[in-house]
Length: 202
Ligand code: MN3
Image 1 (spheres, rainbow, N blue to C red):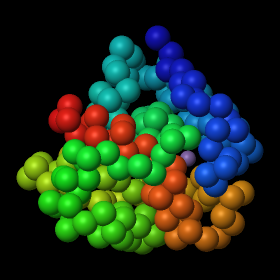
Image 2: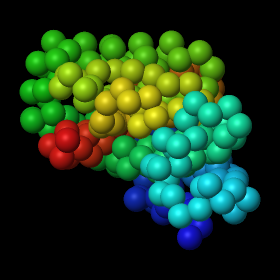
Image 3: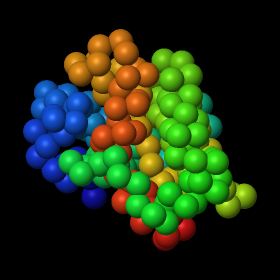
Image 4: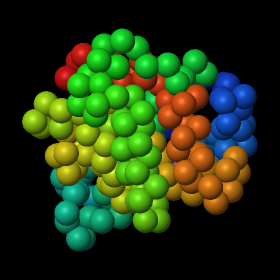
């Protein structure tokens, strides 16, 4: 079974008023994400060791193996983007109460959480991702990974929220201003209801 590009959970115009324009979503979802899916399917078709494995299994299996680096990059990017689309909402930016209580307990406050997440997102040199995870010690943690990597591969915790900080995710809307993209995303676009549901399921 070939992997498929997931449908966006909202219209391509749905986030424009919040700072992510239709062209960004069209290119990012329809071109960038599609390219990762197409490449991954090519690798799976050519390598019997990958046949029948789920996306999660391929990410873990290929992680840290030099000869499977292109597989890991594309499988990771497929997993990361699939989550990223669900991590945004036209009604984003509102932190529900159970998640807020956990954020206050572990970061000291919402402002401190946003500061920590923003620090992770802006200090990721070059391409990569920022994450809010429930770490193995039971505490929320803001972290980052380069390129197509993710906490599923590194074992840093269960993912509640992720933000793409590759330039293709923000250049049309914010040009070179990654810090503004991150702040705007946390305040207006992030789907904290998804993050709270993931926390409750963890
Ligand atoms: Mn991307």
